Image (cartoon, rainbow, N blue to C red; front, side, top):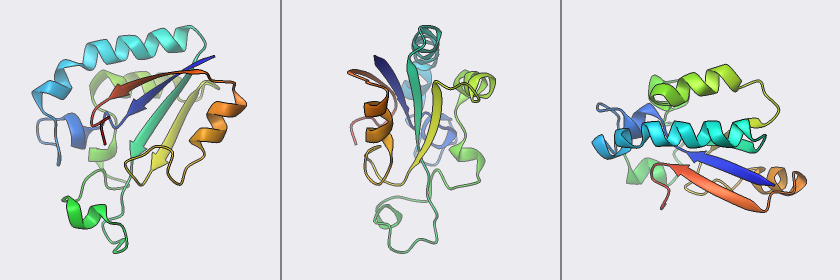
Length: 134
């Protein structure tokens, strides 16, 4: 089984006015990213949206000292960017689509992602999105 993990393709990381934007480079991959996401979805594969979510009042979270506030829970900056947002809205209630909040760089740290992949017998991952190196 295969899974696609879409990492942090949000307004704060991609939009021109995003808090920690990748700018034109992030925007340039939108069409290919959405096509790849649709391909995995259409094949019945597991599609995961691993999305950074922060509380700026969490004084114990190290990112609050390293970066300006970004992907703040409940803000538009945390919403998916562009046509990926449209795809998610159209398919978010499907059994093969999963939105997960992450508080750390790693989508595995403090989350149930490992268990969800194992219980589905996932043996192959495709990573998409931005800031995938951290």
